[in-house]
Image 1 (cartoon, helix red, strand yellow):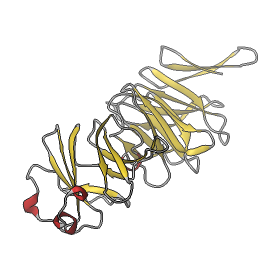
Image 2 (cartoon, rainbow, N blue to C red):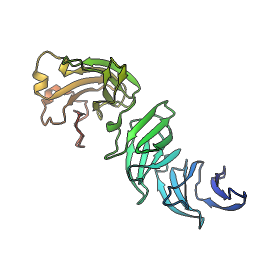
Image 3 (cartoon, rainbow, N blue to C red):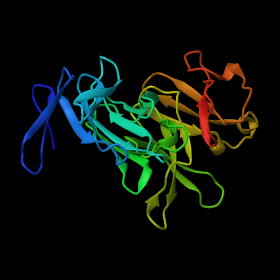
Image 4 (cartoon, rainbow, N blue to C red):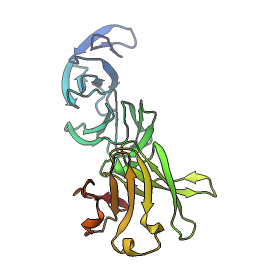
Length: 278
């Protein structure tokens, strides 16, 4: 039985007798969570702290065996083990979610756009080890699929506000467009017969840095000039940016159409159905 103390130490007691067995010292700020490792290493205890570290302790020798750091300016409030191969260690910190491969202690991902305040809880879902839930002081709960590349744009499951609705003009396709405080946008399909909103079918990320106020989908335009140039649409936000978005397969664009204050196209590859700013 492990107990964390206000002295930033962790003490071990026998759950059967209550007898003191030893303690771990290493953290220099508040310990926010402690938990034993998975079944493959039941003798290892993990702890996270406001000193920005997650430390592993061997309960047989009472020594620290590993330390993963998020940086001296960070605080780590919670952590969870999971992933499809049970190799991931996720941690909630100051508006970020960090991922390490605990086997080699290498950081593999950092999600920065999903939350705007402290991420106080992260938890891999039992029975669905690739799904991670997060909760933050900003009032949001998000869910992420950790299979493959882990990034904010691929897992926009929650938004802070809705901007507009869009009807494609083909059949009964209707989308509600929602955004995050960090500037990401998602096109969510609406099934008005069932009264449900699905996961985003298109995500626009990397252009805006604040709240987006207006969206102009080019499919709503009567002429075909925009479509012929592979322009997906335009957006305007409180960050003072007017962003033009293209389809993934677009390779050229007329620069005269683009404001000089806009973010240029990122060289980072995107998955299908992702749209990029210029």
